[in-house]
Length: 219
Image 1 (cartoon, rainbow, N blue to C red):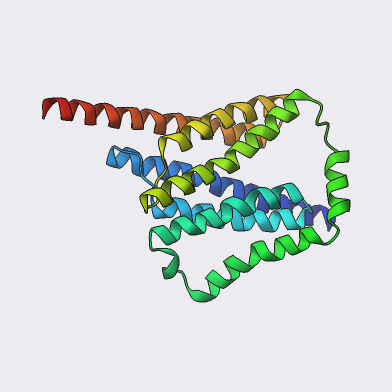
Image 2: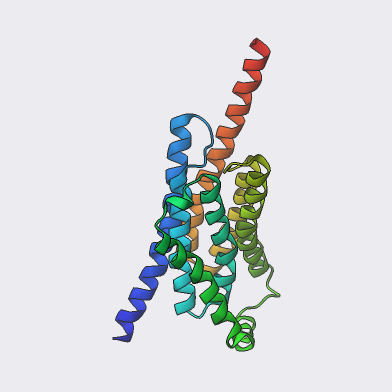
């Protein structure tokens, strides 16, 4: 029975990760279709759903790192939906549940926080440069959404700016190196797919900028 339970838990984690991957493919599809980098609503909807499930996974797994890492970007996903005027279209009850989950997760962190942090540090060798590299990569993947949020607030609309994709690419390289060291197939597959999307968006941005420059010159 325990083995079946573990499969369900890991299945939840893998499903959440697959949604994170799906959002990138959907975003790239819309960008390719329009010939410019776009921030479609479904990108943020998938992001929020994936983060919601991954937060639940983090609570079940007693993983404070997952909870802390996801909570920051979680509210940025909600803010982007607000900027696109799509948050209000979600039924009220669902919005309440979405807002309460991170609060409940933080409550879990407060209870026995010292023991949880001791467990993290006792099971991680933070003197290993490759582990530090992986940690920096994961931190960058979360902080990129702060940059995206700042940029969107500045322009009063949801935007996935060039800097977001540059940060994503650098972070992905760091995590790929770490994943190779740890022989982690989940991270390897996820980041290998991710870096292709990141670089493609950078290329589209450059192409878009070049086309605009030529248009101004010819105009």
